Image (tube, rainbow, N blue to C red; front, side, top):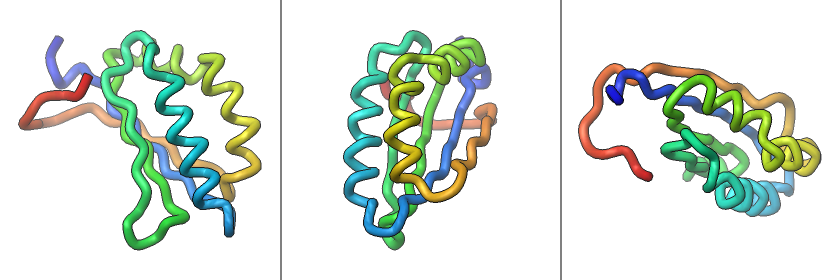
Length: 107
């Protein structure tokens, strides 16, 4: 596999006011629940150091199919109901192709 074949996905979410800790906990659980997804190389969630209501998912997939399967997974479908109560507005999802890198991809 060439690193340029890896699909990189980012997703930005914003917690509703007063729901930051609850959202963080739900997102941490979601990451753990998705650990077994085939073709998922890296699945991480980050909280903005200067804006605790802002969260970023950073994800690596072996293929677009692996990403589609992840989106359709029971874990993600079930999480949507919980997240809809905690997230303000719509999340912004972007897909990327890796152009250059150093280091190893986490697995």
